[in-house]
Length: 336
Image (cartoon, rainbow, N blue to C red; front, top):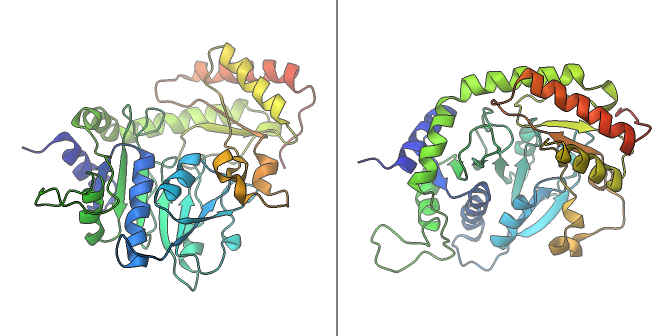
């Protein structure tokens, strides 16, 4: 009998057009195991002496950097463009791996990474662009099914590999390194990252309803775009997950008070990501210059977006946003 997590692997593979799928316990676990499998392609075996290098966006969710750290990779942070996507021109030469993170519903220029002459292994983080297809040459792509994502349950993740050969190792790594013999001789570096059937059963209906839910999200995103003034507007998301806004010149204390003010009104607004160089665990990677990610990190807030919301919900959120902003940020500066 097919288990629910196996059914999810099958149906998600059909959804993205790639059968080489591996269900795991979270989006972070997906990134971690993808990094571990990529690591073996560089060191030849999981216990090799070479410490592979990886380029990761500076402006991203901390899960990306932690996944690479757990895989014992040499991390190099890359600054973002004004649209918050990684500036692929700044990726250092000779990186073994590049993690391409698609931020806030829009796409990073993955094709540019595949044009690099040294041919890095590319791992795409698709958590915020459900519905987009990974680049066909990418080594792996990873998704989160956390409850705030477009395809969601309570928790869960998925990896899709370019080659079927990688699937076997990934499935071993997600189960503490057990191989097919289950004889307690373990593949090195395995973790407990199995997806439970209970979680898969919550994700499957959301996957099956994706197209209808995605249409609703696009419609609501357009309502946001209609009501949000130009001074806060960012490019409309290709794959609506949340609705991000950019208030140029906003300071951290204003960002914090704006989000808290909306939260007090029952609106699930959140601050934008913070630069990875500013995280305590990666502090040794701080450089002297003021990066674009550091400049932008206090200027971004994102607003809730869900297929369960209505047009009236979005209108109310926009009204409350401006009411709170008038108090917290008396003079708003448009984002160029």
